[in-house]
Amino acid sequence: MREITVLNIDRVACDGRGMCAELLPELIDLDEWGYPIVRGAEIPPHLMEHARRAVEVCPVLAFRLFNDPSAASKVNPRPNSRPVRR
Image 1 (cartoon, rainbow, N blue to C red):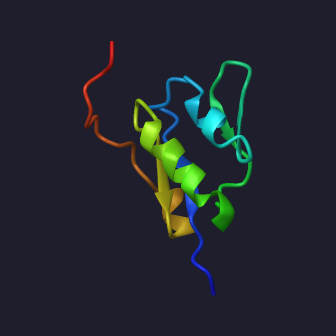
Image 2 (image 1 turned 90 degrees about the vertical axis):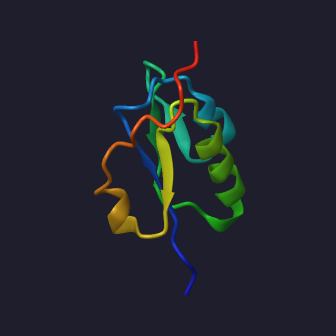
Image 3 (image 1 turned 45 degrees about the horizontal axis):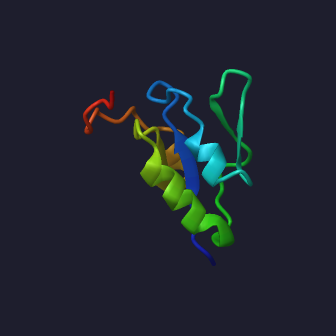
């Protein structure tokens, strides 16, 4: 049985820059205001590296990957661990 990995967005932290959709267009669309909409949170194995890259480059740390699908829906927003870029 393969491990399931899901993508979670902290919608409060997200500021709609859209880099995630550029790096993972197979799973992320942008709404009319530029905020991400995930098409199915489960990450297929062949897109895992792209998903990791999208998580890493998010300037506000709004994305996380979880191995437990039930945990992804119960997360609290991340504390601000990086200085705000100006």
